[in-house]
Amino acid sequence: MALWKKFWLLFAAIWVVVAGLQAVILLAASEEPEKALLPAVLGVAVPALVYALGLLWEAISRWRGSPPPEK
Image (cartoon, rainbow, N blue to C red; front, side, top):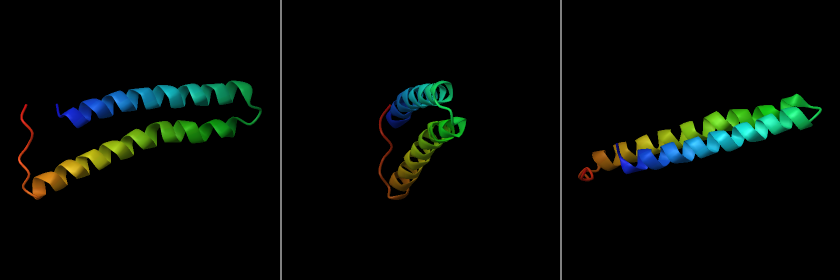
C-alpha cells in the first residue's frame, strides 16, 4: 500500500470519529437536529475528496513519467 494511502486512512479514521462525535453532540444538545446534518455530510465528503485528490496526484505523477516509489 502506498504511503499516502496509509496516511489517508489515518486521517479518514480521525476525521470520521471527530465528525461523528460532533454530530451526536449536536443531536443531543441542540433543539434543532438539522444542525447535525452538516458535520455528518462533511464527515463522509472530506475523506472521499482527499482520497480522490490522492488518486489524481498519483495518476498525474505516472503520466508525467515519474518512476513509482520503491516498496
